[in-house]
Length: 247
Image 1: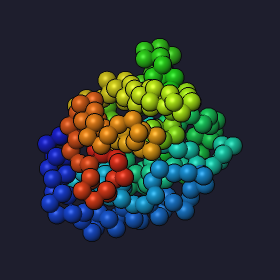
Image 2 (image 1 turned 90 degrees about the vertical axis):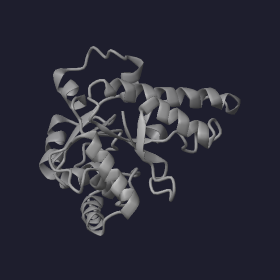
Image 3 (image 1 turned 60 degrees about the vertical axis):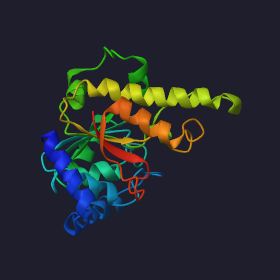
C-alpha cells in the first residue's frame, strides 16, 4: 500500500472518528481471540488497536504481511494459545508472524498455525541488538523480517527486553540504555523493509522512563528516530502512548 493512501486513511479517521463498522469488525476479532487467551499478561486490553490498524489500511488487512515483535506467547509448556493481537489480525486475513523469546517445538508452532493461522517464531531480540549483523540468521528468519506492511512493537519497552537492573541512583543510565536498545532493534529490522512499511511503536513514556524524559523530549526523540508520526491519538489518549509512524 502506498504511503499516500495510509496518510489519507489516517486523516480521514482524525476528521470523522472511527467508523462504526470498523469498530464492530475489530470487536468481533478481539472477542474471538480473547476467549482463547491463556497468558498472564497481554499488551492489548480492548479492540481499539485492531480498529485503528483496520482504519489506517482502509478497513481491510487481508493479505497484509504483519510482524509483531514481542508478541507475547500465551500459555506455557508449548500450549496451544496464541497472542491476542496477532491472532486477531490473522483472523482478519493478515499474514501474521509473531516473535517472542519463549521456545516452542516445531510441532507446537504447527498446531498454533493450524488453529489460528498465526506463525510463531522464538528469537531473543535483545541478542539481536547486541549482535547487529546477527550472522546466524537463516533465510527463513530473514524472510520474516522482509517486506512487511505493518511492524508492531508495542510491548518491548515494558517487559520484552532483558535490561541490566541498576541501583535507584543509576536508573537514568538504565533508562537510557533501554531506549537505546529499543531503537537499535527497530532500526536493525527497518533495513529489511522498504519505505512502504507502517510501524505501530511504543512512545518512550512508559512508567520506567517518565523520570528520564519529559513529554516534549520524548515526542521529539521518537519523531527524530523513527520518522514521520502519522497518527498518535494524543488528544484523547486513545493509544496509551502507542503511535503509528512511517520509518
